[in-house]
Image (cartoon, one colour):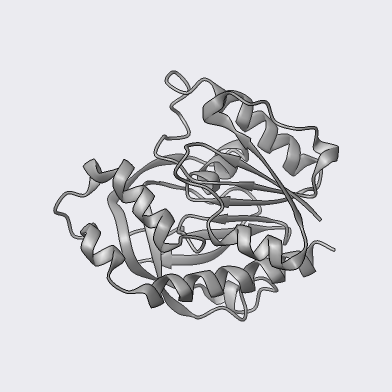
Length: 232
């Protein structure tokens, strides 16, 4: 299987997804949008993964490549590709499918629990995942569910944490791919966001327990395996 991913900043890459792809024997390629690299042809990949970033979906004046990226994501979905969006990636998917993306009531940065919805418990992709799990967050925006989307997860401060469309388009507002190294990269590059607030942890709190990263990476692996089975 050929997996292509869109990377918005140097410090937010595939994380643990890269190890999963290598273990499963998949081919991986990337478009580094911050270098103004053009996306590939739709025929060249099976999966598209859209990663996170500190910009917002409406920041085209500052990041002009966002307009072309949105068109490419829309085309990939229309072409029947399997598409996974993480954080900003999930917001971009929601945006191109006509849903509203806007500022969340509070920023959510650090380790906070999500809960699966009743629909998730019977879905082919999420059914075996923990009903409640502490996952890694780093976001200030949220989205409405796109038309046809099934609501998969929520948190205390963000209602729409995950959705699935047609068992092949998945949006995750939270991070399951984050490793200790990638968390350190976020902290180093976005440390200005670490201000005292109810749902913002300190750098020390975020890096305190290695087992947290192992746990979410295991969940990501389970979800990717299910997605691979579903898209055959």
